[in-house]
Length: 85
Image 1 (cartoon, rainbow, N blue to C red):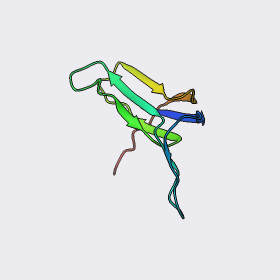
Image 2: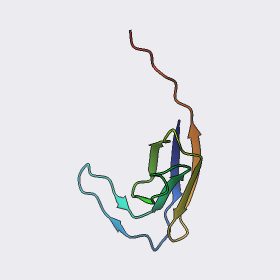
Image 3: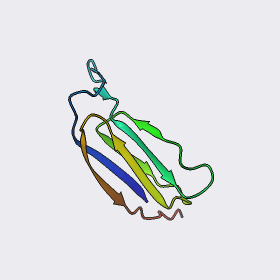
Image 4: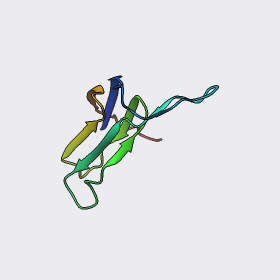
């Protein structure tokens, strides 16, 4: 399973670094964390408009925070196991 955070609008006070050439623009948009077991709960910053992160097996909760009135949608995706022959 994975969680996708798609930032739909970036607030005016967000710190950013403009990419050059093929490099993307980088923003300090906020942070996310998983909770539920030892080793989880640490806040991890995210810097791009699209975040797709695998959910740890022991996670029971997900939280996120956006900076400076940014807005986002959050989607949980189910991943199918791929069998190898």
